[in-house]
Image (cartoon, rainbow, N blue to C red; front, side, top):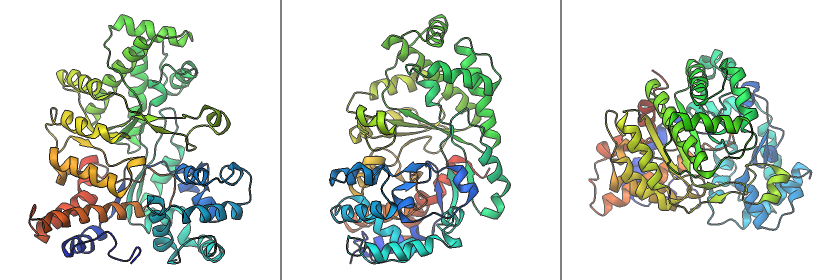
Length: 470
């Protein structure tokens, strides 16, 4: 039956693992794009279109891509059409999305949050719109209650080094009342992207907020150190880096200072200079994170803003990204080998949008494991891979080349307050896979042993690995 209590659970053992172990575990959502201001202000959503299609200051580019593929005019996606008209266009699109994870996610959200088991389509859209909107106006559907009622214990947002973290401070004051933590994650992409036109202006902002007069490379490192300390005081224990492409290239201190001065003067850099700067800065970031016992996340091989016309019209994160198929493993290997010589590798999670990278990345990680349980992790199936088959492939590679029972598990990577059923979906896929292995005799059908592994991957490993509660 569609999305019944045992969907994806194809064996008796998988059903025991999920219902007796995975289902009950809390959630640590250690990477998402929720807006801390919206969490703090805790205002009810206007309607289902705001939640699903244009939520707050963000939009759901997963849905936007499908709507465009279904021939929906941009007016009904990012344009000025009425919310109900946008919702109807999404209802028409969801009918065509059978086999796409959004079909299952959409109906899971209707069931788990709204108690609506009706299949969404153009005909049922009016009744679903009415019932969902009535519920969205209630206390239980305010952002904080959506988080709390989903059994979430930690939410990690994505924050720029120059952010004042005002709303994180306010949320910290109400942490006990809320029943969950909202913690910032350090995302210094704008410091790394020295090739961008806006780099010099951004460095001026970083200088001002850090109190460091930035004239050379060491000044940049000093400013970042100050901001990491600031984030750390507010509970941050991890960073995130959009390392879409990367080429390893070493440089002398003199060369680095020359590169920084050129960029601050808004002179054009060579490809080699860009790579030298990024390599050196990544190593310094690794050093800082290692000293603070932070986790460093790399999100690799996204081909961002591919449609230049629409980027100029709508900006980033609007559904015009793809994956890159380039060689990055060698440069990542050189970066980690160099950092290991100085003993500065922090706890690290490597995600790649290109699943062809997963096998080489996990074998590279194996060369640098030490000190901490699964210090280096292959990140969960990300973005375009966030599907049943993508999750299974990532789990299988992790298991075959490392120790899957040490995996820190799933995240939402979402801008939506209704995305937490993705954790349930992942846990069902995990239990499905373990059930198949047990049925084939690859692992014991020992519920106590394997059930503990499931609980660890669902929650306990993340609890121990990140140290949010230390």
